[in-house]
Structures are given as structure tokens and as C-alpha cells.
Image (cartoon, rainbow, N blue to C red; front, side):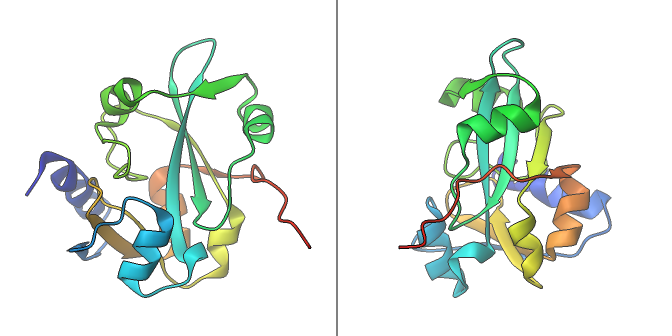
Length: 161
């Protein structure tokens, strides 16, 4: 088991949460790939999107439904400070995960986090479990609690064409 998957497994176990971490043969690097592999709706995928706080350089996490896109201006407003693009080095150093496999829990350091309320519309959501091939299913309210995220509106408005 990879160190990244082991950290997610440990975070779940320490919280007393039973969740099966599943390795997907076809990979789950994108939300679309993950939904296809899990056999679920796109919005049941809990994406972990990392930004960098411009003032401190810290990673900031936005957990969003698979079909939603984080609006950078709204995310900055929610975080209370300007946010910029996080590079792979920052993401790896602060979360311990590589891009495409960033889990919403089990980070190396405490990461401030916000949670897309759209995820709460489902009984079960799926999140990356530390690699681009591993996911786990979890009740969204449990994920919200474990991630220590704050529910907030930070996604782009959906087109109504």
C-alpha cells in the first residue's frame, strides 16, 4: 500500500469511519474518470482543489462536486485573502499527495478547507484516496466533518442555456 493511501486509511480509522478504499484499473485522475469508474453521477465525486494563499504561501482546499468548477474570485472571498494557483511542489509538500490523487483528508499539514454544499445532496460521495487510481465512498456529512471544512458557496454559476 502506498504511503498516501495508508495516510487516508489511517485518517479514516482514527475517526472510526469504515470506508473501503478501492483501486480502479482505469484510473480516476479526473472527476469524469472517477464517476465512470465508480458508476456514479459526476456530482457525487468530491474533488479536492488546492489553491495557494498569496500572503502566506499556504495550501487552501476547496472540496467541490465533480460537475462544479471553483470560481477563483469567490474562493478568495470565502478564504478572506487573495488565492493563486498552487503548484505541484506546494501541493505535495503540504498535503502529501500528488495532483490527481489529492484526498480531502490525511494531509501532512493542517489545511484550511471549504466544502461545496452540493455534495450534501447525495447519500454517498466518492473522493480520491491518495493516488490517481484510488477512491473511497463516504457519506458527505461525514466527509465534511472529517475534513474540518466549512460549507460555503465558491463555485461558478452554472449556465442555463
